[in-house]
Image (tube, rainbow, N blue to C red; front, side):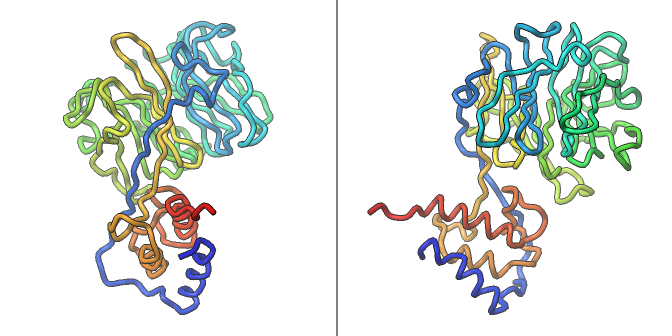
Length: 369
């Protein structure tokens, strides 16, 4: 089948009314990680081996926030930002967020709400409830300056350590790591929720023994749609590949429970340590830190997140897969729910057809003359 024929086939099948659900059990869309690539060449103004780490991106991909210990900062690790005019432009140089926000102590990894107006981070600055606390800074518009940090206070922060916050795109869930008493290991993942973006954060809830282990979990990263949570286990959970691995847990909806975590696998995890995951704004890739714990040499990598579109598992992507997708439009057969994120959005619709066509074109390039 020629590439230009694919949309015509979809139109024909839809026009013929081939949208009835098949009487088979629902399955879940799957995805895989491509080979990670070192991102240093893509960010020539940054030095990942010495100080810089990508913490998060704005939803439009025009701002990139860093955790960095570099000249011109306020003390130890500081919050910095790189900007660009469009996704096609090069990144500008890192800009320190300044002494109003950064302190002489550690101020690092960050997480943005989807409107890019609330920026969460953790800090070891004096005046908190514990050794490390969670803070937020706000701005009125994208072009406004950031206001001063506000400690999230109790019950989010305690006299123990809270770190590495990851806020949901709607600003109603806040995931973080803590070593407070009452957990299942030396460090656990928690979530605090609120009813509206103007309400105070509620009691921090442990994610429970399905997600947390007797070991040490931390550095959570929530996907843009809130259905995938990637986190670090610091080398204690059985089934890992090195000194610290990245794991993920999924849920069917924002109100559904988190499923048992699975290791991201040897394509992503290696014999040393992987940590500080960060999603690309469109969910197409996962940025990760890799480090050698013996030499303290670190680097940053980007692993593409790839939808699996070979639905019938015959080792080829062809018209049979497209037909199966179209026949299941509008059904609960989420095996075919591959868009706009590789793990789907809860419905089989035209967004999944768009993703399929894009993957078809990648895997079936036209013959060269």
